[in-house]
Image 1 (cartoon, rainbow, N blue to C red):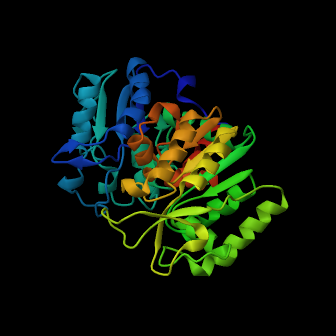
Image 2 (tube, rainbow, N blue to C red; image 1 turned 180 degrees about the vertical axis):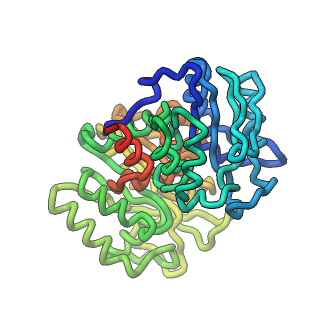
Image 3 (cartoon, rainbow, N blue to C red; image 1 turned 45 degrees about the vertical axis):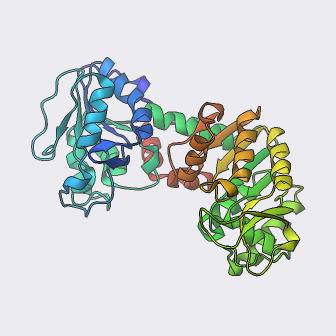
Length: 393
């Protein structure tokens, strides 16, 4: 992949416009989880120190497009950034009509881009308005790189120069390291409730990896494909045939989808549900499978310990309830202890990483969910394609 990197450019005195991903949860006017803001700060600080006039923009929430909505204002994010930088970050609301006056080394934050009509549809006139505000456009929002929108894609097409920010470049470097030339054996762990939502990812990974671990509701469809009763568990009957094909396809090239031999069941989906350990073949009609058992978890831990590359997206059980969390905990600890290169992404995965406190033991944690999955599928991300196009001059 070849694109211009932020670090290649002289930014002194230049008007820089950074598209960051600052879509963070806010409660009572205060940011409650600042991970995405923290991940974006190195790019912002680099531009500040280089003496640029720094303008930052992002979306937040899902307001009705084209309407200003106080509930989704960027003000709490501006407050959080001000605290991090130790200097005021002004929130600029009318930037499309009045280009803001900014001092060299100053940072301002634009109001929510989704308040602008045409943002989601990548409207060309809006994209040109963004582009006119800068000398250098910096795409740093990997979390939205899979969406062709005016602030992520169009603005970069029309800006005088477009480059990748530090976070975006780091995301792409690490994804390429895990997927382009992975150290073998390569293991992918794909959890989630439904095969249908992850089917394209499973198909793409089934051609690349040595072991494809399926977890969560997805695993139930595979258990059923192997002839097991899954009771009342979440399961997609219409995809049982697809699961069988994936197992056969991998077997044919000497690769494997490990299927659980023991499972943890409950009679109802609740925090107080009693957890019962059973052999995979002993599930009753009124059982619901909520986790893998200790034997299956131990087998996965051994596979992970020998891996050269581990790609992780999704838990293997209902880990939010502790009695159904042991499988995900064992897998998490195995990844933390593994010598191989580990790459994790997606909201539930990050929640598990936080719960089991292994943040600093995963080689690389992607800030993205959707873009991470689309990259794993081998899809071209519009914002990345735009940067590559611009690098050709």
